[in-house]
Every structure is written in C-alpha cells, then in structure tokens.
Length: 272
Image 1 (tube, rainbow, N blue to C red):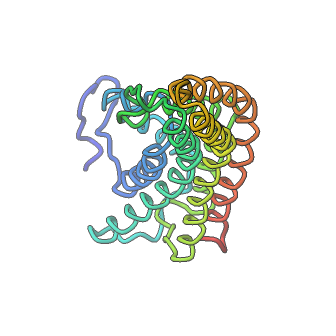
Image 2: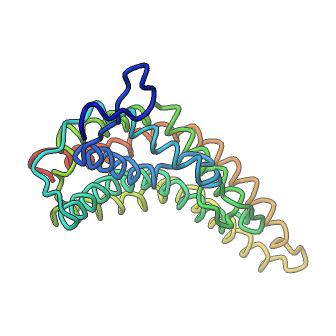
C-alpha cells in the first residue's frame, strides 16, 4: 500500500496498520499451545465461568508470552502447512496440560474410592471443576488438591515450563513422537498409585470394621450391630482423613516431581 494513503488521524500522520501473515501465524501458534495447556489445568471454578472469561484468560496469557517467544521461520505459508504446525502446537499443549491434570485426578480417584466405602457417596453435589455429579468428599478433596497446586507454587513452575517449551521448541517446531506415549501411560499409572496411597489405609481400616461387625452380629444377632457400622465408619474415615490431609502437601510435591520430570523429558532435545 502506498505511503501516502492515510487511514485515520491524518493530522497526526497516522497510516494503515499492516500486519504480516507470519506475525499472525506466530501469535496463533502461541495461542494454541497455551490454550492446549489451560484446557486441563485444574483451576477451581474455571469450567463454571462463562466462555468469554476463559477465552480472555487464554488470550491474555498468550499475549504476555508472545513477545518472549522466538520468531516463526521455515513454515510453508499454505493451508496444509499452517494446519500441520497448529496441530503440533495443540498436541504439545495437551501433553503438558494432561500431565498436570493427572496430579488432580489422582486425589479425586482416591476420594471416590473412599466415598463408596465410608458412605459419603449417598450425598452428592456438583463438582465445580468437572461439572459432574460427585460426592461431597470427592469435591472437597478435589478442591483441596487444586488449592494445594497453587499454594505450593506449582503454578509458577508450570509457567516457567511453558516459557521453557518455547525455548526448546519455537512455534511450529514441535513434532509429536511415538516414544512419548509410554512415558505418558506410565504417568497416568502414577495417578492410580496416588489415589491408592490416599484411600488404601482408610479403606483397610473400614474393611476391618465391617469384618468385626459381621462377626459380632453373628455372635449376638439380637444387637443389630450392622446398623451401628454406618456412623462408625463415617467417624473413622473422618479421623483417617484428618491424618491424610496433613500428608497431602508432601504427597503432592512428591507426585509433582514425576510430572515435571515428564515435562522436562518432553522438552529436552532428545526426549521429544
């Protein structure tokens, strides 16, 4: 466009704003990677927020990260070339976000197993994270895991990992490898291990209570001891949770080490 074709503000010497296709593609790639990560981040209440708020959060984070990322180079400015690099950026973001989500789901899995055995599954409410019908104990421990993620400073480590991902792979340079799948599957297995470590000790005690009540009811059928097992199991589970909650920060930090090791492996030159 000629330099003498003014658009608006002619007295101020303003001209038309020209944005190159490379700059637009660069920002879109950053937006897709950050959006893929935030699709799984367990932020309390983020799913219950209105859609414009969630979109604005992703766009704002991408806008802040965008000046710190290297320029896009070596990408074919065609529809197929742009689509392939966009798909690669989304896959990298989803890998990082899914690894973080496993931390939260491990606690929720343990709470769900404990709710069934302790009797808390009879009272249900809506989980603000998943918007699903869940037990009260499951929602409580799920929110506790989300707040622990923030209070332990793991969100700052995650933001640092996001910036490191652009240093390891400039926008459009990441290519998903088949070797990443076994590490991701192993990390998902750790999610079940974390849930079992939370619920197994308490579930074991509740099982012993059921066995003891069953034996006593066989010895004294007229006492109807099985009717007392329900409140007793709830009280014992609360006592066990009081001890388990004190250990949750340590377990969260221990589990996060494996998660960020996986992310570091993905972002290493030989890991991706």
